[in-house]
Each structure stands twice: as structure tokens, then as C-alpha cells.
Amino acid sequence: MKKLEFKIAVFGIMSLFFCSAQTYAMTINPDFQGTLVVTSPAGEVNLINAGEPVPDLVSNSIIEVLNGEFTIATAENESVQLSCHGASVSVDGGSSASLSCGGDSGLLKALKGSVTVLDAAGKKIVLAEGEEYSIGSGEKKKAPATAAGEPTGGAPIGGGLAQNTPVDSRSLESSP
Image (cartoon, rainbow, N blue to C red; front, top):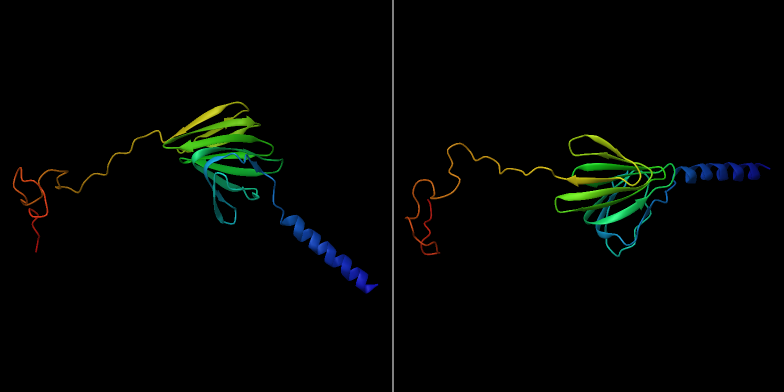
């Protein structure tokens, strides 16, 4: 009788372990374009190029697309984060969305359910089914300022080549 009780206890413990280590069946359209960067909650990073099979995804993963687009669907009790140009997108419980991202812009579409966007500025936007959101850097960055007193072009400091002298390997001067 003790052997039977031991087997039941082991089976119960194993059942609890396997139920808690569950992977979820989020689906990405296999015809995605570009490269997907999938980061699991444990920090494992996978690069998946167009045409390669998409591995099983774990809830709470982060997915980026580089110069491409994809569509993802989540089942109930699942959540995934999408990322494009500083915007973070939450696709939760039974929702689906498509994301295209490349250059300095992207486009997010809520296909089913609602999708929440946290833009690069920290503003929260909720998209209802059928709505779209344009993602972009929104700003052009200036070149950093030079140190005080340094010229931004032209003749070298302290002389250098004479005016109108063509530059070639024979006209370069070395410094001590």
C-alpha cells in the first residue's frame, strides 16, 4: 500500500510542476517579414528571420520587428509586449494586432480586442478594434555641440595646409 501512496504523491508533485511550467500558444503569422527579436521573460533573446519557423512563445515576452511586419494573436490570460522605435505595445487576453516597423516610423493596427500603447514620451493610448496608431521618432536630432573654441570645419587649428592646396599623401604634414 505504501508504494501506491508514494506513486500518487510523486504523480501529484509532477502534475503541479508541469502545470506551473506552462508555455502559451500565442501565434505569429508565419508569413512575417523582416527580423523578429523575441526576448523571453527570463531574458533569453532569439533572432528569427523571415522564412524561419517561429518557436513557442511564452506569455510576457517582448517582440520587436526590424524592418518588417508581423501579426500576433493572444489567447485568454496571455500577454505580450511589442516594441518599435521606443513605443511599447501591450497585446493582452484574446487580442490581436499587426505591427510594421522600419526606418524611423511604424504602424500598429488593433485587429481584435484592444491594444495599449505607451509611446516614447510615456503617453498611454488605448486602441479599440479596427484603430491604427502611427509610430515615429517624431523629432530630428541635432548634432552634438562642439567643445568651446573648436571650429566646426575649414582650416585646421594652428595653420596646416595652405589655402587651395589639394590634399594627397605628399601634402600631409605630420605632427611631433
